Length: 332
Image (cartoon, rainbow, N blue to C red):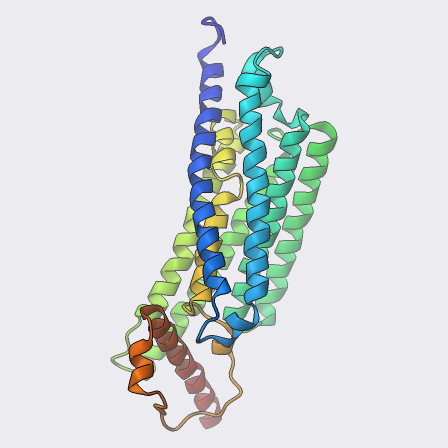
């Protein structure tokens, strides 16, 4: 870039390089959490039948999203190399390559893998929400509708990017981003509201009830959603006002997906360790208990790890909550 080049051009180039550096950091965290999740999922859990039954599906999810995320990151890293090394003498210089990046097939592959990865990740959010709400129809119908709309807009974005190379000036992309963030926010509200309602009813049943279980799960959901939403909202605002520098930085920083991928892995690891709500806790076929049975030996208790003890206590608490609900329905 010549010394006479406008400063705005230089700023966009800096944003591109800074975004790729932040993306490297996110990918490193993403890689470490993927390894950790695979190790946990390949271990047979002592508690939590649903986790044991679905560990292969969860492992497939972790691996497929990692492969897609790796392709997305690799393509973006390669094109960054092309901008300043392989194509540095191209007409218009690095700025033209950054602004017209969809003219190169490598960037379409990165975009497509990122969108497909988003489908998998939002599907997991959808499933977790349905489990916590016990597959309630009034939650399932609008959530599935929103999910289908998001996929439809995603396919439209990919089609337009592949045919005419448009991206930063594509209003469909803006609509897709808004629905994607809205989907995450709605999921967070539904799940945290459900958890807080359960916590409130448990406090009514037991005066000295420790609500830290629900608080910890709700905090995890909020933190995971915030991690992605902050980057996504900045991306949407910058995209809407055509601030291409910030849009490029956010686009690369999260790879449009890596931040939410990290958030999802936190949930996967917690589920695999038996420290999240499962369908077993949401519905039971057994009658209301009249006593608590302690069938475990002292040796079993001393052999428990901290994670197993926490997971068992959470299941006992949620079991008691739903049993108390059934008792109230019977007495009514």
